[in-house]
Amino acid sequence: LGIGFDQSGNKSNLIQLCRYRDKAHDCGAGPLTPKHNQHSGNRYFQQKMSFFGLGGGGLKVQIKLVGSPESSNGIIPLDHLPSWKVRKNPFAVLRYPHQKPDEGYETSDTQSVVSDITTPTMGTPASHYDATPHVSSRHGPIFAYSATEDIVGEVTLLLPPGKKADHLGIKVQFIGRIEMGPAIHEGRPRYDFVSLSKELVPPGTLYNSKSVFPFHFRNIEKQHESYGGRNVSVRYFIRVSVERKFLPPINKEHEVIVQIRSTPPEKNEPIKMEVGIEDCLHIEFEYERRCYHLHDVILGKINFLLVRIKIKHMELAVIRRETTGEGVAMSTTASSHPIAAATVPNDSTGNSHILTETQTLIKYEIMDGAPVKGETIPVRLYLHGIPADLTPTYDAVNNRFSVRYFLNLVLVDEEDRRYFKQQEIILWRKVLG
Image (cartoon, rainbow, N blue to C red; front, side, top):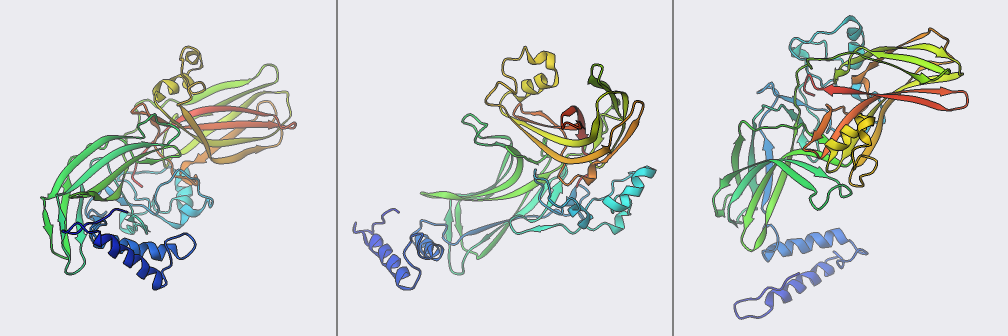
């Protein structure tokens, strides 16, 4: 706990500290053991630690971002904190009409029918747009910032009345960081690709019970979109540090969610492939495009050219595959090209430092019963109806992780044997939200 000495060299502070500990026990706080009211005893003990200068001295730091959707088009409210988890209730997204219509956004006839069901704000004017964000108990109102948006806010320092706080300077930082799980990294669990720092207050003493200091980070290069995965995350946050003499600094962080709008790809060729088993099953599947934005609809068809086995049903699933570890670019290339996989020494199957997590986001049964030769099964899948937070495709970000999406077509015969074929699709973001 540390021992304090007075000017005469006596251990008076230690004796006084023991008195406060006994006093807490006499007042009913209980001893500082897990058996008797540990939380109240720890709070009382921490207050006395602050009295001896070992704690924060009552100084509290608050961070507030000033930007709002009314002041900028590059800020949009979110109804929840994005996560990699799949929502248990697939209709939860219908409760919060939070998608702001993009300027010039047009929907087709088929999309307009579903717009009234799954995306109630996609076809509504901007005046009917509800800009009320979800308020988190930990993060406060949740907003998404575009890649070109400045980060503006203010730092509030609170002190108890009649108290003062000595410091060696107060600084604010904007940090963009890639954090990896403990099973992936080799001695370096995080990597900062953006780090900007500004001094708010020079060394001195705070006397006011409330002090407010504004900050503004302009023209920040936010090259990666925020992502929270199973084993890796991309975070942007504001950190305020209060430096103190002989004591560790007081740090406070505030999360900033960044979303990056992209332009439509120049080449978006259709996917067409014929697969099957020789003399048993030949099918041809075709999808309109390879690249889709996050609110798009996947259209396609499946043709049965030869059917000599008894098919029970057919399923179509959307799979997210997260690959993390050093050398992800080489592993991704090897897994994408089976011929090159034999020449790569450390691929995703042989490198112990590469970890792959596969997650089924949604699964539909698109056919029930045995098909016949020449039959065609249509495919129509709305990405906005998936009960998960879709992200754009990440391709070997800093050679540390990648996130890819696949369409998984599965046929099940009467003996429960499964025949499947996966095809990668590229996702990109058209609107914020």
